[in-house]
Amino acid sequence: MRVKCVICDKIEAIEDESLAAKRLRNRPIHTYMCKSCSDRIAEKTNARIDTGNFKFYRAKSEKDDW
Image 1 (cartoon, rainbow, N blue to C red):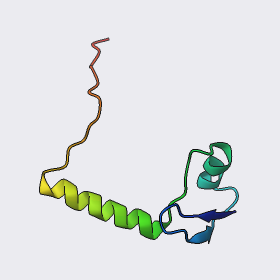
Image 2: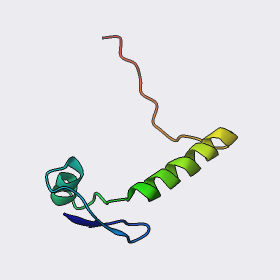
Image 3: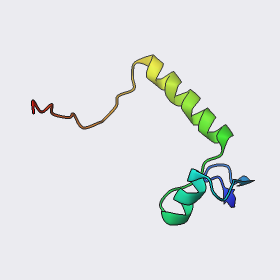
Image 4: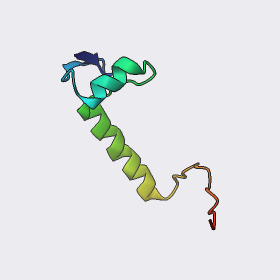
């Protein structure tokens, strides 16, 4: 399956039976990002987390005693 990175527009081939290919076929909202773009974003995000000015806006889960 040929896929295109949403950031750098690089075209790559992934295996047709892979999980990523299945997600792209069945759910059009999923997008593909190449390995180099994914690594670059992860590196920059980790650098922002290390500065201490990065906040996670996640809903707090309530613990149930049951």
